[in-house]
Length: 310
Ligand SMILES: O=C(O)CCC(=O)C(=O)O
Image (cartoon, rainbow, N blue to C red; front, side, top):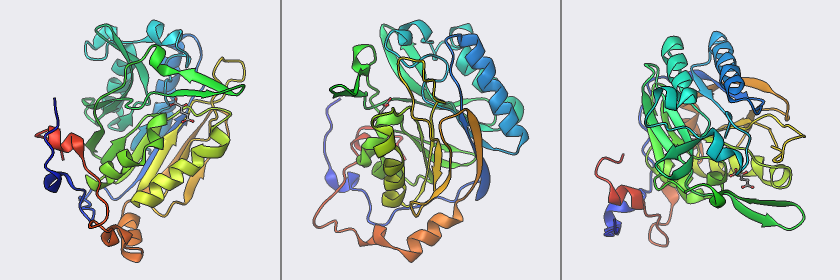
């Protein structure tokens, strides 16, 4: 659909509205999972990690990018699931739905290859505490990179890009979703912040070339720019796979501070989020109110195009 621009309706407000979340403090778990070639094993393995984290009091679970399949263009079509059909057509999301319901937790289900008609997407499903699918984010920015001699990958060889930002109200606050490369696009994070996000979640699998330089930097930048929490979750590193993930799943606070992080081995990080810190940071350092809307503007095109957007 053609956007009919009415910039006055789409301008990101100077002062960001922060809705009252259902809970102020809660525990998040980042499950940095090892990924094997056996999909059934990956599903059972993820379920175990989620249940262990729930036993330790986590109310929100974040999984890695592409946790049910090896990260490769050859694997995506083979491991892809029809999420919309559900049931046997999507054993990975069926497990996420069942566990979120049985443990009454919110799950940001990392991402899996999704088949929809003749297209494939890299998709993240969000499940509420009743097991219902609250949202599905299809990776908007495909990872096409060519650093000669170091890193070449072209997701666009097999995948199609998603067309919409995804922000979702959950029992643990308003959450903006991005997948891996999506973190490089600060406008997306700014739009989520403008729509009142408390937390941005990025399942991601950075690599050994860009990971050391950019992974933490980008997370801290998004958190400091938007003054909100940023959580990331990577697969654990497998040195023998064709794509070697950087690991280093991390939670960053609204001052850009790293609250918890790890190396590259399989592990689950559990940390506390306290949303009252967001207001405190925005009061101490009120740059959200000091934007020069007379000099520059951010336009929320998706909001213009949709009727029900927040
Ligand atoms: O942006 C990068 O450097 C890595 C992105 C990536 O690995 C991905 O999108 O899967």
